[in-house]
Image (cartoon, rainbow, N blue to C red; front, top):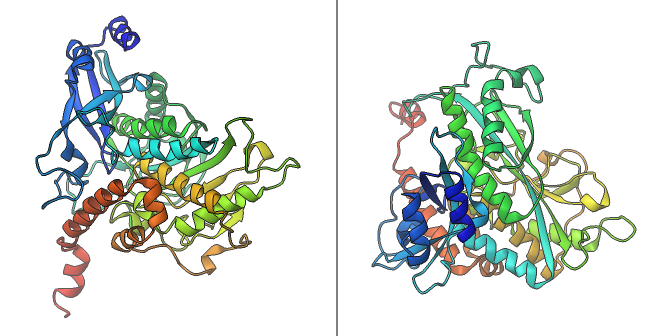
Length: 448
């Protein structure tokens, strides 16, 4: 903590943004003057109400009595993680941002905080002398500013002043259209220690994808969490929005958060997915077996919003089932063609709208259950997996029901967290059901 205080003084930081990811992955917390921040480290002065984890994506608090949050809405205190401190690169004056864990006043961690959920899953790997490694790929759209939510979204215009109409997957000239905002994204990432690797234009109009270098799951979750606000700020600088909605456009593909994952033996550093002869190991198959069995139940972590399920449709660059295959992008679980040291599984189910802590925790939890129970996968799929049955949940309520009945997964994730997640997401679903859509007004008003 003394080193952190020295860093703040050396960089002449005026304010510190203390960030906590809520259930939806939205940054909550406090902005405090530097001296107050330093004082708060010793007297537990950085406090927030426990009910921030009962906030929905709309900002509403879940109505009624919670089975998890105390009725008194007690204080919890933010414990800044020194390893996460970074500059906020888009402010003219020196401002720092730091990600915080949250503890009860008796010092015990809040078990349903998303960062704590991921830490709990990682601890279960550690007990087995295993170390997961992940590499997320995150898609997003650049869109024209939209001040009326009843009006459909439009692609942002690039340097030419024209909006894209066709699909330009991997198009260099199409990506160059947005060079100014992309350059600012890279500059902001460098200024705040976000380790992004490559960028490409994706299949949608003004849709981009950024790949992250592989590494520690908690560090990568922190980076994705910060990356989302970084991209939004870079887009605003250029008078446009950046959105991580799972499917913002009716006739365009959705945005995903593909999660590449491998597991190392913590004692040797070797990838357990490879045999000594460089073949796929039984542990790789068991890991895939765990994903196949539990991905449906983990869908509230991969597809947490009502809009999430609009992305999961046939022939839309999103999977519709939990089949797996070698270097096959039509399946939900892809094993890329790679060298043995890099053998990994790519979970293609999660959307860009997912909370990165929960999406990574969910996929690692499914794989861990496969390793523990030595679950066998189905045979790998060759060819088009879209020709096979659609077996992923189609609605948020369906996925919440599946999670409720998946006791092994609930135990790995933490039963208090699962209860809280169900409370928040069920309430969000209820709020959504009150909305009358333009489709209903157009087609039902005078016809039924």
